[in-house]
Amino acid sequence: MTLTIDNLTLKRGGVAVLSEITAALEPGQITAIVGPNGAGKSSLLMSLAGLLAPDTGSVALDGVPMGALDPRERAKALGYLPQEADIAWDVTVEALIRLGRMPHRDTRAEPVEDAITALRLEGLRDRPVSQLSGGEKSRALLARVIAGQPRWILADEPLAALDLAHQQTLLNHFKQAASGDGDGKHRAGIGVVMVVHDLAVAMNHASRVLVLNQGRLAHYGPPQQALACKAIADIWDVTTQWVGEPGRQALCLQDRG
Image 1 (cartoon, rainbow, N blue to C red):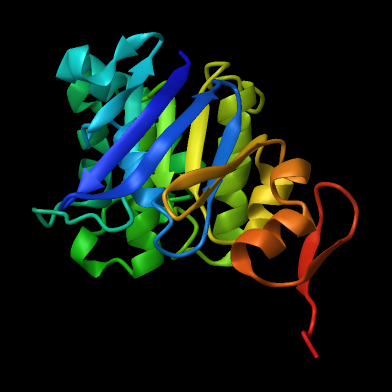
Image 2: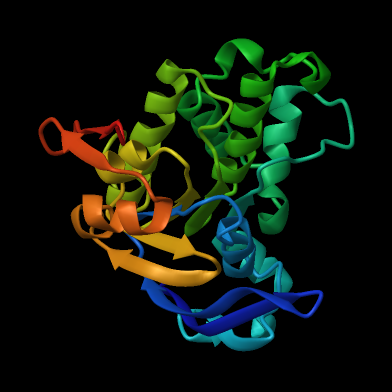
């Protein structure tokens, strides 16, 4: 299931927040969306999820425009995690995760247990969500998405509230889900799209990086190209240097003197 963005323009209050974006996002890959504050990252992710209708252009799943998809089929195919999500009822963690099965209209236990294990939530399954820390809540909400077994996971800053250990766990899960490796329960070819601010995460873990700047597509390609030091200087107005070996690189800011 390819996600295709074709000449997408999105306006709010008559002002374009995304302008003429065109890209094809492939399953089996992790795509990182990066860019300065206000670049349109969250708006693009919401457009991919079918939650914002473009003013011109389109977003399509396997060639079918989002607006033409049956809402339940779209919910089964696309798992969306916003930056901030309100939980209406003070249910247990396990009950919250089970809600991820709603588009399928079933209560299968295996996908729920897989999601609990993937996010290391075994010790929290019976805890009310009101008693969770910010990081624990983020993991529980993402587990709800994973339990739905979507073909695409669309996550807006999923690492923001997590400590280092849980960041690594989540990134490993995304890699396994995209590749089909791991415990053998992931379906090959799942696509992952995540908004991140940490460019080192995008460099080391993404297959492709989509760089936005002022609502426009600045770069889209392998991280070594999209996040080259010159590209970073042009967009973020900082001088940087990548150090370390591929897959374990750190981004160093250089003093302007």
